[in-house]
Image 1 (spheres, rainbow, N blue to C red):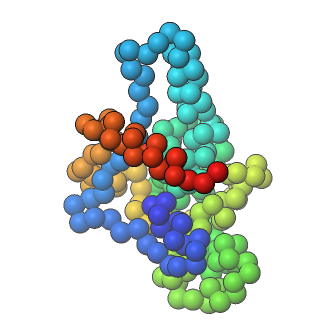
Image 2 (tube, rainbow, N blue to C red; image 1 turned 135 degrees about the horizontal axis):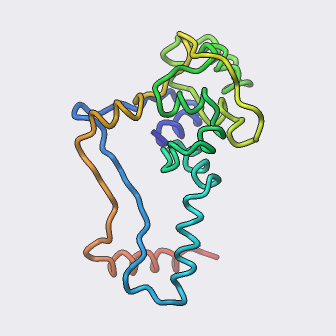
Image 3 (tube, one colour; image 1 turned 30 degrees about the vertical axis):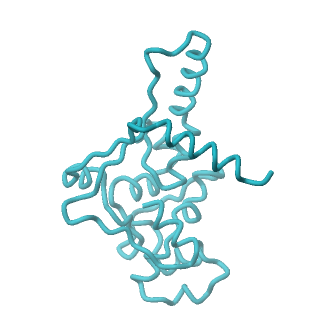
Length: 190
């Protein structure tokens, strides 16, 4: 869904469509090689620990990605009920979508009167749920019948329909990729 969020930020309505056979579960992870040297191991462990901190989990969420801390109490509290339930449980925002547009697009009055389906396709989670990154108290209330709902639905729904799993892995021709990356970096003017 992050690609849709970026498209929306550019002012283009976008929905994230679920594939007919369900979404692909994309899983990124970090691994420490069994060949790691003893001087590198503490730094690798420090990096892995950093990735599991609340701050990093919040950073992933701000970008639109689910976080591994989805069931942590401090993560849920940082999100607040409205954001957590919108992001993970397929619940609507507490404010009607036409009012949400005034928060997401305060200087673009033209979107305030668009049809509801276009307003939903312009919803900006990082603007509407700004308390998550600013430390302000989260909004309270209950889901509004014409509030915004996240495009793909709940975790439970995604788990039920997901049939394909992808995890980026170490490529077979890694030296080729590294050489091309180094050549690209060398060609960029300083």
